[in-house]
Image 1 (cartoon, rainbow, N blue to C red):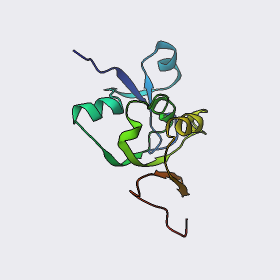
Image 2: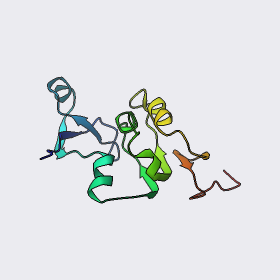
Image 3: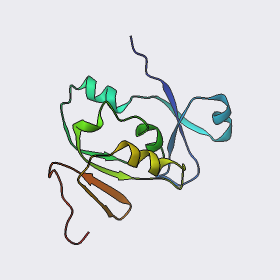
Length: 130
């Protein structure tokens, strides 16, 4: 039986909207205060648990965990037609590289505010003003 890994929610002092996740390791726990410990789950596990054949729009705002989520997308990225993501390179260097390496194959890319939009199959397309 699969057991979800424990992940710490930590407060890196970015304000109310800047909580992050961090795997439970002794050296990491000492650095910042843990607000809560939660069960973790991968995107692939969500897709399998809900028997998702396709995801029209995947919205991601995960405060730096983009680096881990996009490190290996081989088993799920083809199911996603559009991604809207807020990248956090300033929090965790390597997030941008991981995201762009793991999200190849999208026809459209544009930015609006803090969000990066990727789309294929005409799911969503950029506005002429973007």
